[in-house]
Amino acid sequence: MKRFWNWVRRPAVLGTLFLGTLGIFVAMVGFSAALDYTNRTEFCISCHEMQTNYEEYKRSFHHKNISGVHVGCADCHVPKDFPAKYIAKIAASKDVLHHLLGTIDTPEKYEAQRLVMAKRVWRHMESRKSKNCRGCHDFESMELEEQSRRARRKHTEAVETGDHCISCHKGIVHKLPANYDG
Image (cartoon, rainbow, N blue to C red; front, side, top):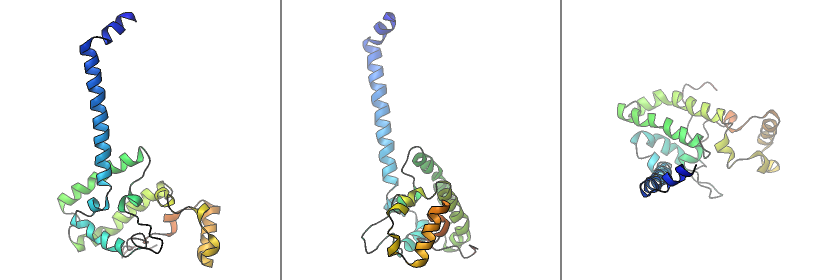
């Protein structure tokens, strides 16, 4: 053990350990900064394909509402917890490929793919039990008595059955696909 510590204390080894640690730290901070940058709505809509989504979003209560709460793309589409956030960002790299391939670069192509894209997002939300939604919309915090009779009944049923937001609230920000059968 003494030989090991003597070896570690050598200037070349200490320097290498220091530089390696510093390099890992800089890489982690840089990666985190890149994730934060790509989570901005301005980044999300920088591709013309996302203009359709953006126009729909701007007409929703998630963009502008009486309470002044503003939700961005990442609030709904990117998990906040580790490692789900990183997995989602890696999976989103397919969007760059589809941008380059021109898969949805016209309104007609976009509409033809809308159901496929929506189902992918809904599956992801279902698998996480609408966790991103529940960051803002929590059954425990809802004032059910202030809701309509139908909403109060549905939300009470959802709590009892373990249901969650996306089960009922598809098409709340982006319009439902024309060929969606509910």
